[in-house]
Image 1 (cartoon, rainbow, N blue to C red):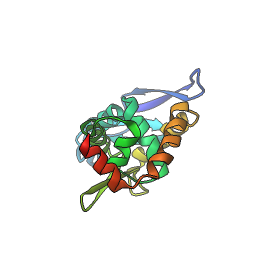
Image 2: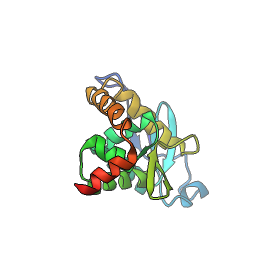
Image 3: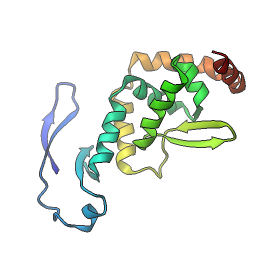
Length: 171
């Protein structure tokens, strides 16, 4: 599929339509190795990803709490207990949200002992993932919920993560 420029929408964002891209041979190695393709254009770029990758990203961005988690991670790496405390949701709910974000490659994780830390992906992430995150950050830059989350995050970061974990285990 290829995009066709349609102008700007009412919010000023570029509007594209997707259509069949005949310029790419149906059995080209780049498509066959990826198992299918979807082309999306952000900022004038053309990307190729599998339908599964595309759907994983759109699913991840379809939930307000997952978008809030991504926006919060702009401040840096956080452990699961800090994210749980910030959003006031059950640990299992936060875990499910983080799993969906991880499957979509929108977050990276690392384990250190019994702690699991999450962060936005770095420069090694696929270009389309970095562009989706950039688009989301730009589109929601003035979101009042993000400002509230940032203020609460400052308070959460003042609490020792070990204490947070103990507190959450008692609940």
